[in-house]
Image 1 (cartoon, rainbow, N blue to C red):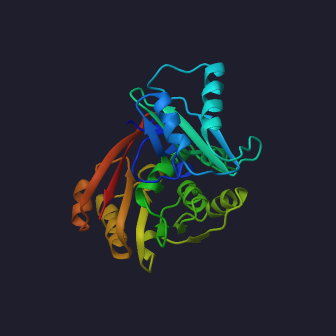
Image 2: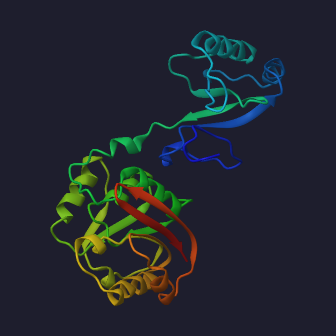
Image 3: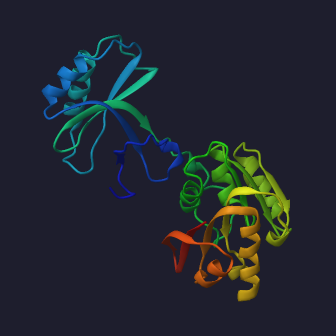
Length: 280
Protein backbone atom coordinates (compact mmCIF):
# COMPACT_ATOMS: atom_id res chain seq x y z
CA UNK A 1 0.00 0.00 0.00
CA UNK A 2 1.16 3.58 -0.47
CA UNK A 3 1.84 6.07 2.31
CA UNK A 4 -1.32 8.08 1.65
CA UNK A 5 -3.68 5.15 2.31
CA UNK A 6 -5.91 5.46 5.35
CA UNK A 7 -5.92 1.78 6.39
CA UNK A 8 -2.75 -0.10 7.24
CA UNK A 9 -2.68 -3.90 7.09
CA UNK A 10 0.44 -5.21 8.76
CA UNK A 11 1.87 -7.98 10.93
CA UNK A 12 3.65 -5.29 12.97
CA UNK A 13 1.76 -3.20 15.52
CA UNK A 14 2.29 0.45 14.64
CA UNK A 15 1.01 3.22 16.84
CA UNK A 16 -0.84 5.43 14.35
CA UNK A 17 -0.10 8.53 16.44
CA UNK A 18 3.56 8.26 15.45
CA UNK A 19 2.83 8.55 11.76
CA UNK A 20 1.78 11.58 9.74
CA UNK A 21 0.38 9.23 7.09
CA UNK A 22 -1.48 6.40 8.87
CA UNK A 23 -5.00 7.43 9.78
CA UNK A 24 -6.26 4.18 11.31
CA UNK A 25 -5.03 0.77 12.37
CA UNK A 26 -7.04 -2.44 12.55
CA UNK A 27 -5.45 -5.34 14.44
CA UNK A 28 -7.27 -8.33 12.97
CA UNK A 29 -8.89 -10.79 15.37
CA UNK A 30 -11.00 -12.76 12.90
CA UNK A 31 -12.18 -12.67 9.30
CA UNK A 32 -14.57 -14.21 6.83
CA UNK A 33 -15.02 -14.36 3.07
CA UNK A 34 -18.58 -13.05 3.53
CA UNK A 35 -20.11 -10.77 6.16
CA UNK A 36 -22.30 -13.57 7.51
CA UNK A 37 -19.24 -15.78 7.92
CA UNK A 38 -17.50 -12.99 9.84
CA UNK A 39 -20.51 -12.66 12.17
CA UNK A 40 -20.26 -16.36 13.04
CA UNK A 41 -16.58 -15.95 13.90
CA UNK A 42 -17.34 -12.88 16.02
CA UNK A 43 -20.04 -14.77 17.92
CA UNK A 44 -17.44 -17.35 18.98
CA UNK A 45 -15.30 -14.73 20.75
CA UNK A 46 -15.18 -14.47 24.53
CA UNK A 47 -17.40 -11.93 26.27
CA UNK A 48 -15.98 -8.42 26.81
CA UNK A 49 -17.78 -5.46 28.38
CA UNK A 50 -17.37 -1.77 27.53
CA UNK A 51 -16.84 -2.03 23.77
CA UNK A 52 -17.88 0.03 20.79
CA UNK A 53 -17.84 -1.03 17.13
CA UNK A 54 -17.02 1.29 14.22
CA UNK A 55 -17.14 0.58 10.51
CA UNK A 56 -13.85 1.48 8.81
CA UNK A 57 -14.26 2.98 5.35
CA UNK A 58 -11.89 1.45 2.79
CA UNK A 59 -10.75 3.89 0.08
CA UNK A 60 -10.13 0.96 -2.28
CA UNK A 61 -13.80 -0.13 -2.36
CA UNK A 62 -17.08 1.72 -2.81
CA UNK A 63 -17.90 4.03 0.08
CA UNK A 64 -20.61 2.68 2.40
CA UNK A 65 -23.53 4.98 3.12
CA UNK A 66 -24.41 6.12 6.65
CA UNK A 67 -27.50 3.92 7.12
CA UNK A 68 -25.77 0.76 5.90
CA UNK A 69 -22.71 1.62 7.95
CA UNK A 70 -24.74 1.89 11.14
CA UNK A 71 -26.59 -1.35 10.33
CA UNK A 72 -23.27 -3.21 9.97
CA UNK A 73 -21.99 -1.79 13.26
CA UNK A 74 -25.22 -2.81 15.02
CA UNK A 75 -25.15 -6.37 13.65
CA UNK A 76 -21.54 -6.84 14.71
CA UNK A 77 -22.32 -5.45 18.18
CA UNK A 78 -25.27 -7.83 18.59
CA UNK A 79 -23.06 -10.82 17.79
CA UNK A 80 -20.47 -9.82 20.38
CA UNK A 81 -20.94 -11.27 23.86
CA UNK A 82 -20.83 -8.67 26.63
CA UNK A 83 -22.16 -5.17 27.20
CA UNK A 84 -21.54 -2.36 24.73
CA UNK A 85 -20.59 1.17 25.79
CA UNK A 86 -21.32 3.79 23.15
CA UNK A 87 -20.34 6.94 25.08
CA UNK A 88 -17.05 6.14 26.85
CA UNK A 89 -15.90 2.76 25.55
CA UNK A 90 -12.89 1.00 27.05
CA UNK A 91 -12.38 -1.08 23.92
CA UNK A 92 -12.74 -0.01 20.30
CA UNK A 93 -13.45 -2.63 17.63
CA UNK A 94 -13.44 -2.08 13.90
CA UNK A 95 -14.97 -3.93 10.98
CA UNK A 96 -13.66 -3.54 7.42
CA UNK A 97 -14.46 -4.82 3.96
CA UNK A 98 -11.15 -5.34 2.15
CA UNK A 99 -12.87 -6.03 -1.16
CA UNK A 100 -12.41 -9.80 -1.09
CA UNK A 101 -13.09 -10.50 2.59
CA UNK A 102 -14.40 -9.02 5.84
CA UNK A 103 -12.16 -8.47 8.84
CA UNK A 104 -12.80 -7.60 12.49
CA UNK A 105 -10.36 -6.50 15.16
CA UNK A 106 -9.04 -3.95 17.62
CA UNK A 107 -9.31 -0.44 16.22
CA UNK A 108 -7.10 2.59 16.81
CA UNK A 109 -7.46 6.02 15.23
CA UNK A 110 -4.67 8.52 14.71
CA UNK A 111 -5.56 11.70 16.59
CA UNK A 112 -3.07 13.57 14.36
CA UNK A 113 -1.22 15.23 17.22
CA UNK A 114 1.42 16.35 14.75
CA UNK A 115 -1.08 18.67 13.05
CA UNK A 116 -1.12 20.86 16.16
CA UNK A 117 2.65 21.23 15.84
CA UNK A 118 2.29 23.04 12.51
CA UNK A 119 1.37 26.25 14.35
CA UNK A 120 4.60 26.98 16.17
CA UNK A 121 5.38 30.33 17.79
CA UNK A 122 8.58 30.46 15.73
CA UNK A 123 9.32 29.08 12.27
CA UNK A 124 11.00 29.89 8.99
CA UNK A 125 10.24 29.02 5.40
CA UNK A 126 13.26 26.79 4.78
CA UNK A 127 12.63 24.55 7.79
CA UNK A 128 11.41 21.00 7.32
CA UNK A 129 7.65 20.74 7.26
CA UNK A 130 6.10 19.18 10.36
CA UNK A 131 4.93 16.14 8.39
CA UNK A 132 8.38 15.48 6.90
CA UNK A 133 10.05 16.05 10.27
CA UNK A 134 7.79 13.46 11.89
CA UNK A 135 8.47 11.00 9.09
CA UNK A 136 12.23 11.58 9.44
CA UNK A 137 12.03 10.86 13.17
CA UNK A 138 10.19 7.61 12.46
CA UNK A 139 12.87 6.66 9.95
CA UNK A 140 15.60 7.48 12.45
CA UNK A 141 14.00 5.55 15.32
CA UNK A 142 11.58 2.80 14.21
CA UNK A 143 11.74 1.59 17.82
CA UNK A 144 11.91 4.33 20.44
CA UNK A 145 12.55 2.36 23.62
CA UNK A 146 16.01 3.02 25.02
CA UNK A 147 17.08 5.13 22.02
CA UNK A 148 19.35 8.16 22.49
CA UNK A 149 18.96 10.64 19.64
CA UNK A 150 20.55 13.97 18.81
CA UNK A 151 19.76 16.78 16.39
CA UNK A 152 23.06 18.71 16.27
CA UNK A 153 21.81 21.23 13.65
CA UNK A 154 18.37 21.66 15.16
CA UNK A 155 17.44 24.98 13.56
CA UNK A 156 14.10 26.14 14.89
CA UNK A 157 13.44 22.73 16.47
CA UNK A 158 10.94 21.04 14.13
CA UNK A 159 12.56 17.61 14.52
CA UNK A 160 12.97 18.10 18.27
CA UNK A 161 9.27 18.81 18.78
CA UNK A 162 8.24 15.69 16.85
CA UNK A 163 10.73 13.41 18.60
CA UNK A 164 9.89 14.73 22.07
CA UNK A 165 6.16 14.32 21.40
CA UNK A 166 6.82 10.63 20.72
CA UNK A 167 8.64 10.24 24.03
CA UNK A 168 12.08 9.87 22.42
CA UNK A 169 15.16 10.77 24.44
CA UNK A 170 16.61 13.49 22.20
CA UNK A 171 18.85 16.52 22.71
CA UNK A 172 19.36 19.38 20.30
CA UNK A 173 22.04 21.92 19.57
CA UNK A 174 22.85 24.58 17.02
CA UNK A 175 25.70 27.00 16.45
CA UNK A 176 23.37 29.95 15.83
CA UNK A 177 22.72 31.76 19.15
CA UNK A 178 19.92 33.86 17.65
CA UNK A 179 17.49 30.96 17.28
CA UNK A 180 17.89 29.08 20.57
CA UNK A 181 15.28 31.10 22.48
CA UNK A 182 12.82 30.39 19.65
CA UNK A 183 13.59 26.67 19.77
CA UNK A 184 12.98 26.54 23.52
CA UNK A 185 9.74 28.50 23.17
CA UNK A 186 8.53 26.10 20.46
CA UNK A 187 9.20 23.14 22.75
CA UNK A 188 7.54 24.78 25.77
CA UNK A 189 4.53 25.83 23.66
CA UNK A 190 3.50 22.18 23.28
CA UNK A 191 4.12 21.27 26.91
CA UNK A 192 7.30 19.35 26.13
CA UNK A 193 10.66 19.32 27.87
CA UNK A 194 13.95 19.09 26.03
CA UNK A 195 17.60 20.03 26.33
CA UNK A 196 18.86 22.50 23.71
CA UNK A 197 22.33 24.02 23.77
CA UNK A 198 24.55 26.40 21.81
CA UNK A 199 27.10 24.15 20.16
CA UNK A 200 28.72 23.53 16.80
CA UNK A 201 28.31 20.01 15.47
CA UNK A 202 32.09 19.62 15.49
CA UNK A 203 32.10 20.19 19.26
CA UNK A 204 29.46 17.58 20.12
CA UNK A 205 30.67 14.92 22.54
CA UNK A 206 29.14 11.77 23.93
CA UNK A 207 27.58 8.80 22.16
CA UNK A 208 24.19 8.51 20.50
CA UNK A 209 22.30 5.72 18.78
CA UNK A 210 21.17 7.98 15.96
CA UNK A 211 21.57 11.56 14.76
CA UNK A 212 19.25 13.53 12.51
CA UNK A 213 21.19 16.14 10.56
CA UNK A 214 19.32 18.63 8.41
CA UNK A 215 22.14 20.51 6.69
CA UNK A 216 20.88 24.09 7.06
CA UNK A 217 24.20 25.70 6.25
CA UNK A 218 23.54 25.19 2.54
CA UNK A 219 20.82 27.84 2.79
CA UNK A 220 21.97 30.07 5.62
CA UNK A 221 25.64 30.50 4.73
CA UNK A 222 28.33 29.39 2.34
CA UNK A 223 29.99 26.13 3.29
CA UNK A 224 32.78 24.37 1.46
CA UNK A 225 32.83 20.66 0.69
CA UNK A 226 35.70 20.28 3.17
CA UNK A 227 33.60 21.89 5.92
CA UNK A 228 30.70 19.64 5.02
CA UNK A 229 32.99 16.62 5.26
CA UNK A 230 34.17 17.70 8.71
CA UNK A 231 30.55 17.88 9.85
CA UNK A 232 29.88 14.34 8.66
CA UNK A 233 33.11 13.06 10.21
CA UNK A 234 32.02 14.62 13.50
CA UNK A 235 28.67 12.84 13.22
CA UNK A 236 30.49 9.57 12.58
CA UNK A 237 32.36 10.13 15.85
CA UNK A 238 29.27 10.43 18.08
CA UNK A 239 26.55 8.44 16.26
CA UNK A 240 26.37 4.95 14.76
CA UNK A 241 23.43 5.83 12.53
CA UNK A 242 22.69 9.13 10.84
CA UNK A 243 19.70 10.38 8.89
CA UNK A 244 20.91 13.21 6.67
CA UNK A 245 18.58 15.77 5.08
CA UNK A 246 20.26 17.78 2.34
CA UNK A 247 19.64 19.87 -0.74
CA UNK A 248 22.97 18.91 -2.28
CA UNK A 249 24.61 15.72 -3.47
CA UNK A 250 26.66 14.61 -0.47
CA UNK A 251 27.22 10.96 -1.44
CA UNK A 252 30.95 11.39 -1.87
CA UNK A 253 31.46 13.04 1.49
CA UNK A 254 29.21 10.47 3.18
CA UNK A 255 31.56 7.75 1.94
CA UNK A 256 34.66 9.71 2.97
CA UNK A 257 33.18 10.04 6.47
CA UNK A 258 33.05 6.24 6.63
CA UNK A 259 29.27 5.95 6.39
CA UNK A 260 27.32 3.59 4.14
CA UNK A 261 24.07 4.84 2.59
CA UNK A 262 21.55 2.06 3.27
CA UNK A 263 18.41 3.82 2.05
CA UNK A 264 17.32 7.10 0.50
CA UNK A 265 14.38 9.09 -0.84
CA UNK A 266 13.50 12.58 -2.04
CA UNK A 267 10.92 15.02 -0.73
CA UNK A 268 9.82 18.28 -2.33
CA UNK A 269 8.85 21.55 -0.67
CA UNK A 270 8.09 24.24 -3.20
CA UNK A 271 11.17 24.66 -5.35
CA UNK A 272 13.36 22.77 -2.89
CA UNK A 273 14.01 19.07 -3.42
CA UNK A 274 15.59 17.51 -0.37
CA UNK A 275 17.34 14.16 -0.23
CA UNK A 276 16.93 12.03 2.89
CA UNK A 277 19.78 9.58 3.38
CA UNK A 278 19.84 6.81 5.96
CA UNK A 279 23.46 6.07 6.81
CA UNK A 280 25.19 3.60 9.10
